[in-house]
Image (tube, rainbow, N blue to C red; front, side, top):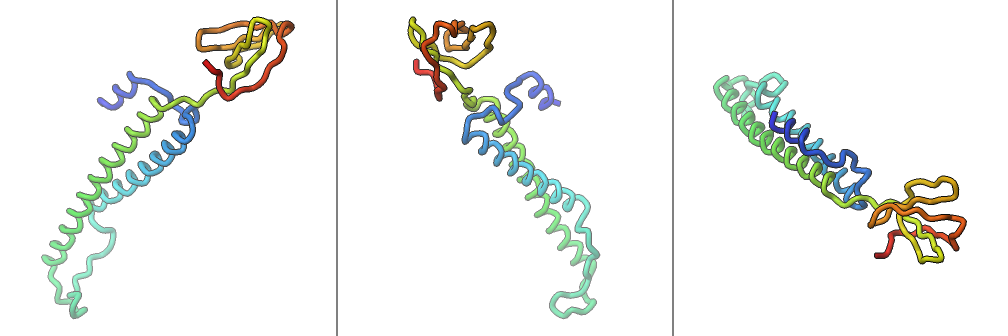
Amino acid sequence: MAGLIGFGLVKGRSDIGELASPYDAFVGCVLLTALIAGTVAALLLLRAAHGRPLAADLRDPRTGHGSGSPTDADHTETLLAARALAWGLTLALTCTALLVTAVGMTWYGPTRTKPSIEVVTPAGPRCGSVVRIAAGRLTLKTSTGEITVDLERADGMRAVESCAP
């Protein structure tokens, strides 16, 4: 319940495609690892709770004859169940930690930069990401806000990786 409320109140990015490279690939690998750890944890916890899904062999492993006792088989099964429980709990906690890491990196990791355009005007260069274009006017989103450039008065434009401050 606390997890649902916490994740419902605190909201960040919900798509790893918005992350800058290589963070997006790293988060994908963390999520895959969490999925594997969670699956193995669930199988081990089921194994610990319900036993091995095989018939117990009561034969003595040294002789191969039916001299093994049910008590010995129960003791062996108990030890195997305890080991499965310990590993299952460890992997379940690992899965939780990996999921928290992936969500945290998705929320707080660096954003993928949008393509920018630099427009050269008589007043100087204007740089930003395109918001809209209409009636010969280009609106750019800059670090200081939105600016509108009259394209009829522009001397040129080019695509840039990022806008220089």
